[in-house]
Length: 137
Image (cartoon, rainbow, N blue to C red):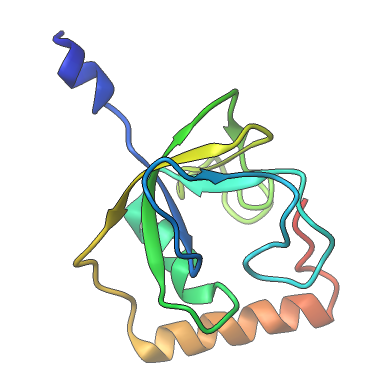
């Protein structure tokens, strides 16, 4: 297998409203995109564009929804907030790391979910927060 094929064998994405540039680091110690909880001790990312789109669409704030191709700089583990708690296995291919993610590029030209689907998902997230089920580990 060529080196190029190895480099591009797996892409990871991060959906947010943050305005970042290639080379920037997404690091622990910042509040979640979704809650007003304490700063997170993990950074979250996915290997599916669909999950990253949800991340961008559900992110708090007024900034433009953005999706970045990211590179983990350290060890990664399955995201326990989704893996096995909500979905058996890891079908959303969601991960987390204590090490920063390096922004490689911004994904452009992606298409979001239907407005009704986003509205329903946001209402579900809000309900989970009120009921205490929305905690991010």
